[in-house]
Every structure is written in C-alpha cells, then in structure tokens.
Image (cartoon, rainbow, N blue to C red; front, side, top):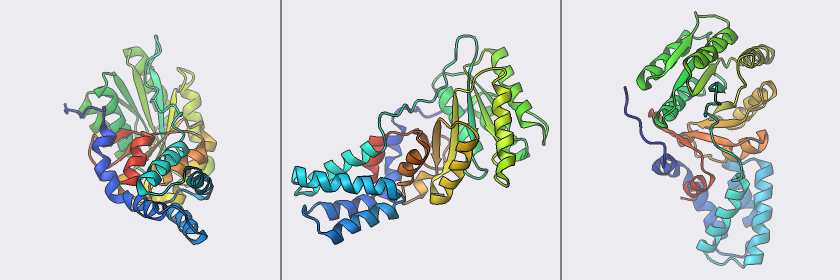
Length: 310
C-alpha cells in the first residue's frame, strides 16, 4: 500500500511547476499594463497576448473591456497596481463562486456515485486512479468500476491503481456491456457499504451517436440503483480548441458537473481553463500537474491566477 501525499496545499506545492511554463503570459501583460496610459496598439497587444494564451475571444473581450475601464478609474501607474487589478479581473473571470467540491460523500444508505468521462488518451483512467487516491487519503472507502470494457488495458490499469490504495475494482470481460459493469460496481458499493463508487467509462469518439448511446445507457442503468452525484469530464489541457470541441460532444450526452484538466503543467496556455468553464458553464474542479501519482490537485482560481502571473 502506498503512502499518499496529503491533498491540502497541493496546488501551492505544484505552483512552481505551473508557473515555469505559464508566467510568460503574466510577464508580457504586466509589462504592457504597468506603465499606465495605453495607446490602441498596446491594447491590441494585451488582447493578442490573452488570445495566444487560449483564453478565447469572449473571455478576452470581457477582460480587456474591464481592464480599460478600471485602469482609467483607478489611475493605474505602476506594475504592482497593474498586477493587483489584473489579478482581480482574472480571478473574477474564473467564477470563484462555483462549487468545486467533489461530491463523494455517502448518502446514509448508499454511496455517492461519480462518473468519469472523456476521450481516450486524455488521462481519464489515470485520473480515476488518482482521484481514488485522493478520496482514500481523505478517509473514504472506494469501489472502482472499470466500465471502459473496450480496452483491456484500461481495466488492468485501474486494477493497479486500486491495489496501490486498497480499493476494490469491479470489472467485466473484455467487450462486456459497460452499463452492466457500472451497475455491478454500484451494486457492490451499496452491498459493501462504501462511501463512493467511481466509474471509469469508455471514451471512443469515432461516432458521436455510438458514444451518446453508450454513455447515456451507462448513466440510465446506474440510476436504477442510485443517483449519479458527479459527472467529471477529463480534458487534456494541451490540445486547446480541439478539447473544447470534444467537451461539447460530451456535454450533449451527459450532464457534466465538473471538469478535470490534465497536463496543465505541459501547456504554456493556461487560458484553456477560462474557455472550458465559460463554454460548459461548469467549474474546473481538479487539475493534473504532472505524471506523479499525487499530482492531481483541487483547482483554486486565486492560486491559479497567481501562478499565471508568476
């Protein structure tokens, strides 16, 4: 059994890793804003900097408009004043009021049920394993459901994660019906009186209808046993716009309640966080910041913006 890093303060411990790749954005913005009065060319550069960082045109437009207005109102003249304003505007754009808790507390007579969805290759199964570690570290009893039955490797991978933390895995034969495996996992969770059942689903995007039918069915079948509390969409932060197209497909299939952004340490474009939340109207709840088993951290808008600004 592994020793698991405490979850408290993870984002701060990982901040160095985040800011190394990302504070180029912060530096150029502060350089532009720090002098006060900006001409049109400078405002265009501010806009370009935000767009290049993957914030998307809607968020960029709002941020620039607010900055222009507030720079004048507050008479910003120094880099530290510019930094304070920029920090405030960026945090606000990340909707700090969102509930970012993972709904993994049991309900009296039954466990909570979390569905993990996303395209294969985004780190979905790994994220499920890392999330199990977080929950176990917080004292929860967990059952994992290996409902990605199209890849034998996915179930094996989940089994390995589970063994390392002392969680049980329910799996089917290769090619088994994913909904049946998910149903069995929830049934086992109820029978064993665990706190939380985490179900890893298949993420084949070859046809939208195939994916829709399958995920829709998994959720329907689970709900014969127990409500689904959280549907977490795993997205790879390094794929930018493409990831948003994927996100939309999943959002049409199941009600996504939160996003996990993996590989956030590998992108100079942390702005994808802004776009994803805006596009889906749900919070980024967790971020993956590396290959380590304990590199999954709760997302905190203020800590993230501080890393962005370096």
